[in-house]
Image (tube, rainbow, N blue to C red):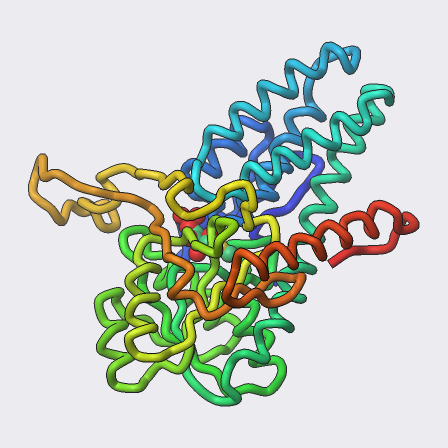
Length: 363
Ligand code: MRU
């Protein structure tokens, strides 16, 4: 399995996603500030991977803090969380990862400093394993929705590289292939950062899953020609009403899918669902540098000084979404209700995990 990110005693190790597909290079971030830079510069990217990277960054910062008491450690811990919080705004998993570390800090605050530090590192490592397990369970839930033979369109990269392993949307595809379904993939190239052509095509080809790259403006024509049977994408944040923020261009694909009566599925772990945000209007959209649009592989492709828009994400209204696949089950319209039901299951499962004997694992 691709090691998207990994906790080591020396720091957090990432595959450098800015160098793929031509170079497979790993970078070691020895402190929390370099983890924050890796998230900001998209060395690591994809909502679930960002969430666990954030948790590992917090654990690393806390582990290496110089405080002699928990009282002294708390303001240092708050500063570490602040720096990591400010890296990227849209993927709610980032904030989920930090909050979970905060809760762990509070829970262990009566212990000694070394015990507290150890507990924080263990929590980040647990989140890593839980993310892989969640992707595999999501894969099982989603695989049954795909045809026994057909072509699936995906946008951006929601694969092993966007998670701790296996992937969300690509996890659904992987599980369908493992179940014997004959699935081919159309990967939107996903301008401007090209996560589709650089990352999705790379990891699916490595797995031997037949993949065709198309430029983003080809999806409509392919649908009209009957070449696409389903769409599966990931998500950066899902509001309580089922509106979905995902990579810019997802909304266009969703509208096209509805026009052509093609099912549009979203696969995401529960850490991507933000029940505190009622609808998509409340989701902050990251604006990235103009250079991502005006330059391609370092070469200028637009006139000097041209005005540029570069929102990194868009919001797909829930009416375009056929189903949301999570590790706790599949939500369908009306999402307000179905997501509430899944939230109940999520709470029950996390209670069971807390009560489970040490060594047993949750999904
Ligand atoms: O800007 P990125 O590359 O971090 O955006 C990633 C996406 O939009 C993915 O589709 C999303 O995070 C789902 S990943 C499982």
